[in-house]
Image 1 (cartoon, rainbow, N blue to C red):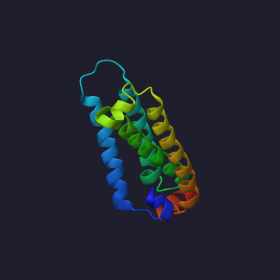
Image 2 (cartoon, one colour):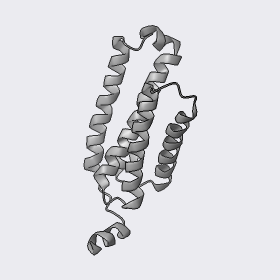
Image 3 (cartoon, one colour):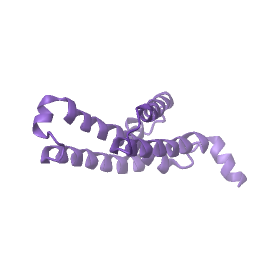
Image 4 (cartoon, rainbow, N blue to C red):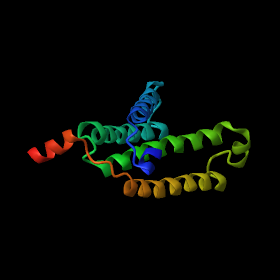
Length: 143
């Protein structure tokens, strides 16, 4: 998000983020299969979002700039969503506030996270103005 806000490509961190997020999602499918769970559904969504982000960033070289910003932001949001879920499961003080994750503190935390990412993504789409690379521009001219 910092790169989007400051209008910088941050190529190395982008590769690191997309790769580690994809590996995290993919390795989640390697556990014993006991039916479709919310975690499996979230993993599928994450893999699809990451695929679209990767295409927008690397195959069309930011010609789909807004698509890239939105999908990369959604991928980061999904990571943070899982962080909140895991925090409420593993941290005793949070677990005491929402033992079943159906209580108001959990809902408030997730809603706050969603709102932060919603507005941050809008800001990022407006702020990130990196032009497509010369490869993408030459392909667009050829079409």
